[in-house]
Image (cartoon, rainbow, N blue to C red; front, side, top):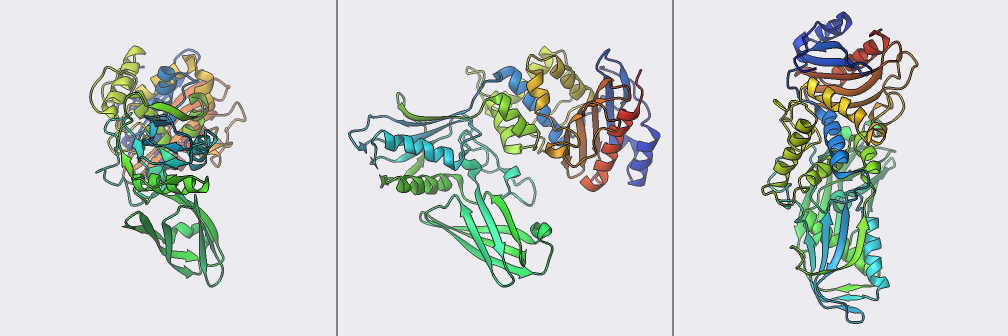
Length: 462
């Protein structure tokens, strides 16, 4: 498909772009029939475009091909010395290994394992080991991606993604007051409510949300919720507003106390000592299962975690883990005879202003996905149009044939789609479409993308 000639977009698509105040060259597309490789339509197929979350298809396919479907992230609790009766005299180390399933309940079970071994008192410190990735804390110094850095989709992962550093808030109001419940409950955490109750639509409660303020006093944390909230409304959200080292400290102390344990030491960031023995282990789900949690809901932290894990494959390589991950992806492209010129990678999730990929490159990746030994796992991770994931509420197949499996993407100025769509005869087609323009908001761009998918579904490509 390299060098495929550009052609005019379908007239109906051009009309929609024009009505939205966007020129035809704001859109780049490629449609290729799978059975014989025929390029059905190509418009600017060699133009590098911002892909938004369709880039997760790159990370997930390369990830399962390089790591394998049974790969699991791992978290370990370690100690340099054996317990002496009920007492652990050395430091307790929590070492992260790219485990995306380490929620607070999984961590509780790990600590419970220590209690089952008879350990009650920890006399050393609690060490947090994030050194599997370099640098260990990619979030430090990183500029917020947008105006809501506290929400889950913006969490920048490290090797120890402990509960994704999130606290869950369940907000409940009546006509006069607002209450909040926090999960997990953390000793030393206080929530101050500074939210004005208003008459408003409960479904639009986030419109009145403002960035919370967090203050620290020794080991205690206060989070002040700000903005407005509708009366007679119940809503839930998860926020990342506590420094992750302090969050780990609060969570550990709370859970260990709940289990009847004692701890008087400090919490520190440090690598596990050489020769430390494993006391408890948590394994995440297999990558074959995890792909669904990345692609169907378009999970940015999990995609970024997988991308960073790719950067650890070559144990002899040097340099930052993200740079090594980029090298792994480029090597995969070249091994599959896909030209990687113009490909620009950042964090592997598409939540980036700098990432670029050509439609012809994305189509080449999707073609390779069908040939992959792990094609069933890859395809089953993609949202099904009109059925589930981020496409659950989008229109279903135009011709009632086999469902379309598609990954969408939306950023400010970007709307995109990539995946597999059956044509009017049921022949499967690879479809890639990117719109890059300042007027391509979700409200404007998605109907155009949906219309293009429908055009493929109604077209006889033979």
